[in-house]
Image (cartoon, rainbow, N blue to C red; front, side, top):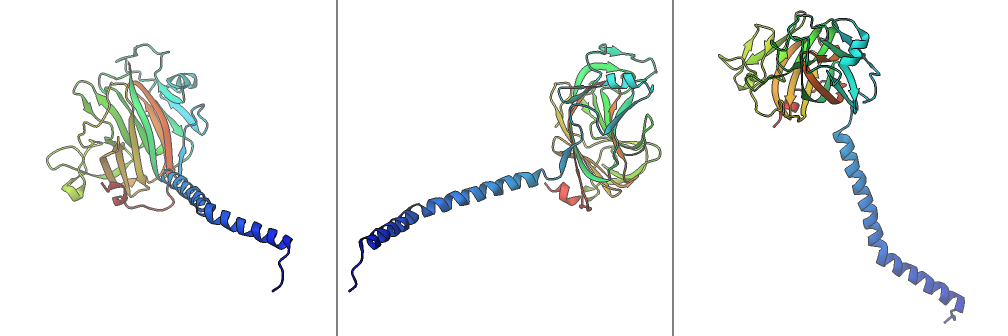
Length: 294
């Protein structure tokens, strides 16, 4: 038998040692690799969950927005819609506790509008009430709102409204009510013999009258307790709109006209804070059932 040299023995020993080390730590290395892959998967899932949502308001200025109030006073509009701590603060500390109540002027009624038009999307935002009151507060207590599918930006605009309102006299929530101004249209269903929203598949009756259509009753809201409300408007062009508040579906309408337009947030009768205004645009139609699943 051929004699093995000393160098060959050394090489063989190194090779065996390498194999042993690979055998011992190999699974651990594989585990690390799998852990890394799992981590990336978790990150991807997180990204997918928020995929497509972008901030409409940058927290610093009104880039890609414009302001409009009834008086047409641009300086006053900037004062009404003050930017503070990455929020829009309507009727901030520069206003008195009661501003032009009952004068009929209502000159600070207005909106801050997107420059871009939208059709199919989910709009998310948060709001809470302050204590200051203004304008025609005696008629519309703690009143503001979000207009969407706006095709005429007059005060008030031609578009569909997601009402934001709290009646402190009755402790009733009106956030999520639908408002149908002149020049707009939709199909709405309500409780038989009543005046609050109910889906047609749950027994809702078609109601063509009026311009104000109440959200379904809920106690899941924050009035004057300095706590934020989370709101969503899910709209698919001219097909349907869904109004949500704090995760709860509270109103819905079908056959919308118009089917696209700009978006505007209101100043009306009370101090209000807006923040975290986000939008996710859709390229394709998504059936309402996907959003109504419990």
